[in-house]
Image (tube, rainbow, N blue to C red):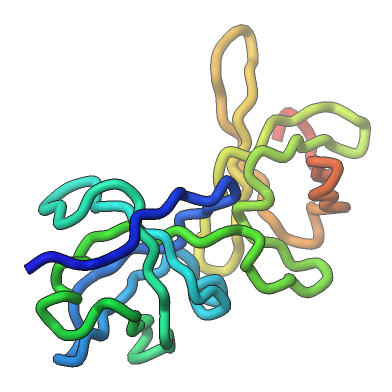
Amino acid sequence: MTLALDAAALPADAVEVGRIADAWGIKGWFKVLPYSASAEALFSCKRWFLQPAEKGAKTFSGTVLLKIKEAKEHAQTVVAWAEDVPDRNAAELLKGARIFVPRSSFPTPEPDEYYWVDLIGLDVFNREGVALGVVQELLHTGPQTVLVLAYQEDGKAKERMIPFVGVYIDQVNVSARRIDVDWQADY
């Protein structure tokens, strides 16, 4: 069996938000493993762009467009149903596919809330104006999120971690690509 999905160009602002885990039920629904604790980007966008799994069976190639009819939370995961996925056999062909959505389709965050993808690449400075590094990734450690910064010292690449909590974060300015913190370089 093959899927009749339309080939598509990946949007310039595409963000990988999850992957398809497996078929769910018999009517073409499938389970999704979101990369975020909040799957709002999956729920707000009805056009998902898929690319084949990096490992394992590849049942399609290139980038394809999946038109979502419904996506919802179910038992601490996400399940979805799409046009052109008529039954369980078709849904099984999507297993492992990487899901991308345009960043422009994300819901607008509340004040003082940020999407992790918007923080990656921002320069971080302390109150004295000392550059502490560039945000490379964020880690969720349970009680808090931690900024992981990359910086150079004596010609060597190093990492610095700063808790992303109000007591240390003075200001986030996504448009200026900058985060100001109450943190010292020798912490």
